[in-house]
Length: 374
Image (cartoon, rainbow, N blue to C red; front, side):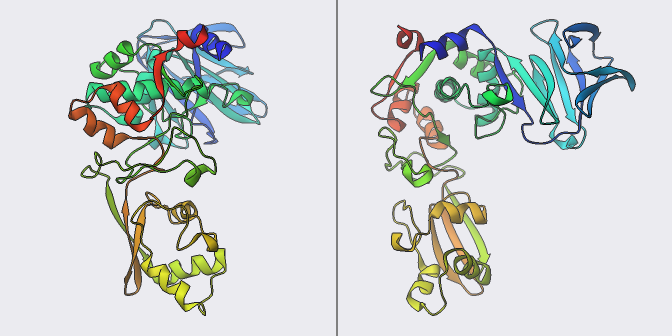
């Protein structure tokens, strides 16, 4: 842990952007200030708001173009900001609807003959972007403090998650969502990052916790072994009343009855001859969160059903609705750890960030990471 903390403090964090998307080429347009362009460690030119840069691949090399003029073919391209306020727009040419406005420095190289784009920035800027991406704007500042502390803890714990790809974390939700640029328009987020500087959450053995969070638990959080086949002592299921009247607390989804039945016949070998079991396909209820559908003896994990039908959660009841099965569900997400909408409601009711974290992560401690280093 000492090594991780020291390393994390001494260098910037590297984020894989558009990870696994197989982007064919990128264009870069500077929004503010300017960038210095380096190719294989050689300075080439400065890129201002008047210029457009295009990067594509050719065999095992990266082709660099400026205003449609080929500059050359290289192993690595770097875009280094000339001032701390520099930011640019990144447009993946085959996913133009996914363009991003990001700040910091950038590096590009090939991994398995695919373009790899890495955003390099400091920890406060990273946290601001993650919290804005995960929680959105215009939230209570006390809630932002909660999200910042958990995001910092998660980043430290998973710093080597993409070590083999030569970056630390990616922009997908399995790391932490990273879609929005560091932005001075959101002072509440900036203040939350500043006021919780270096704070992390640890368990009773002073290990960094699994700082998991989800949108809405539907009134009851989930056990970790209901989701990932392993039990974590400080992440136990409990009733949470704070999220019950929030935006994503309930949902309804209709599935054609033949599709519902065929799923269980094909994947779990249920037979139409088992009338008692087939009847429960339409009448299954969850007064509390369960791990298995109908009964554990049939070995049907609720998480598999959620994944196959792309449901918002595993916390649902079934109703026979003629030619359809209607699922009436609660919550949004895996249900483990922090319920974001519940935490937001607690913040609106004047609970402090430490009270909120202890509510969702009992038997844990909030402390400066420097203390752990000692």
